[in-house]
Image (cartoon, rainbow, N blue to C red; front, side, top):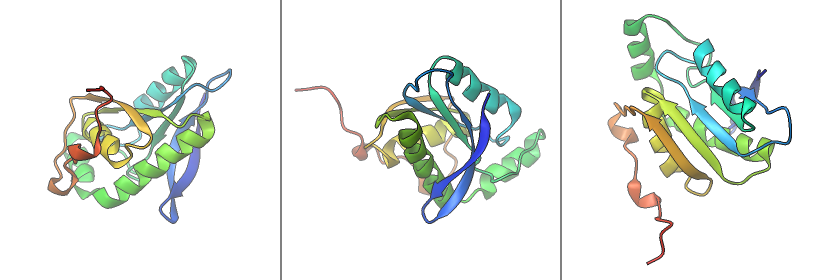
Length: 156
């Protein structure tokens, strides 16, 4: 259902898996990988969101690397350049806005991706309006979310 795409990332490009719905595009949803990489399961999750009407993008934060071995996955996660990942995630949000035609997007992530979903919500509060982290893990001291960037939508 989806296809591999390249999107702008702070002057460069980043790869990702884009799944479009069959009908009119609904809101965009960013699907962030586990520490395994952009594996078939994450692509399937994006396809399932597209089947429900969402424009789903799963960025490849390891730029082509993936594994099925836990030790190797841990090494990939800890070797990931978190500053580059943040740029890639921001670029992914922008692509979702463009492809969906909606300014507001949602983010879902699993394990490492759950932590990065929380981070993305604070990096792009202009666009990210819903974040769903599944057992979010944020092992990088420099990537702790700055919660002050999120405003409450409640009126007082």
